[in-house]
Amino acid sequence: MQLKIQARAKINWTLDVVGTLPNGYHDLDMLMQSVTLCDQMTIEEAPELSLNVRMQGGGYVPADGNNLVLKAALELQKAAGCTRGAHMTLRKYIPVSAGMGGGSSDAAAALVGLNRLWGLGFSADEMEAIGLKVGADVPFCIRGGLQRAKGIGEKLTPLKLRRPLYLVAFQPCRGLSTKEVFKSLHEQGIRPEDRPDNEAAKKALEMGDVRALGASLGNVLEPVSRRMRPEIDKAIRAIEQTGAAGARMTGSGSAVFGVFVHSGACRHACEQLQKQYPACRMMRTAETGIVIEEN
Image (cartoon, rainbow, N blue to C red; front, side, top):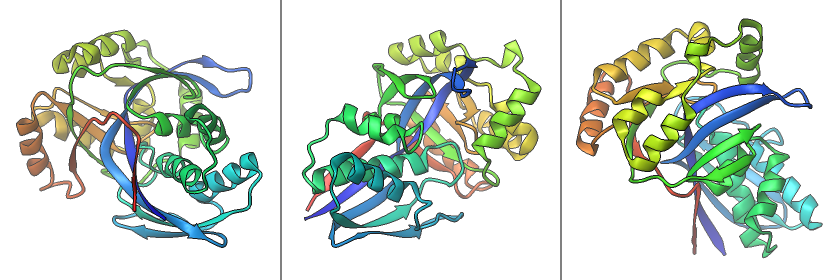
């Protein structure tokens, strides 16, 4: 049996830091969304665990034990008490170190795929608990869709998106270290005007009001990341100039996105932006984070 899996990227409509948890990690409050941009993975039975990575864009991703895919596979073996193997081939389309959850989505795809390949029978909740040991965004990537995420990102509440929304997204510069971005945020603090309006954004998403959504987007990490990578600011302004209802950085960066009222406007904006940013891609919101096709 061979499994073909789509591991979908995510964007943050909002990202706020509301405090510090007892373990020292930041306490977050976010609206997270799966989008149709995805990495592609194939998994098939093999004597041992192995991974082959094929980059379809820029950047570098290791294929050794530092890759979240293999870390996830090992955690799954440990949880199941099994030693079965699999060969995994990963084709990377999601930009690296971009805040779009590429590594986490790949880990989620490995967990969901191997759970099926090996017939382990773990529930989604059980896989999310295993995934959390690999990365804070892995539970979201397993569940997908539109979620209100709190804690370090593992406390998920599903929300209903009124209608599909159309976006452009791209990485205008080198990636950023999430650890370094949060360190700088701790040093510089958060201005009240940089906080997102989570409740307004949630209401806009549920009502399908794209213009209200654009006005309520926000990411407290964006000012910090902009100072580290001024290209982020330039890219956001470029998206806004194409008529986006709103444009922001996602995650800790360095990818940016813009949301549009209509698909036609989004398509036209993408064509314009590709003249300056060839990596710009049009996408839409998705209801799931992982899609599996069984051969």
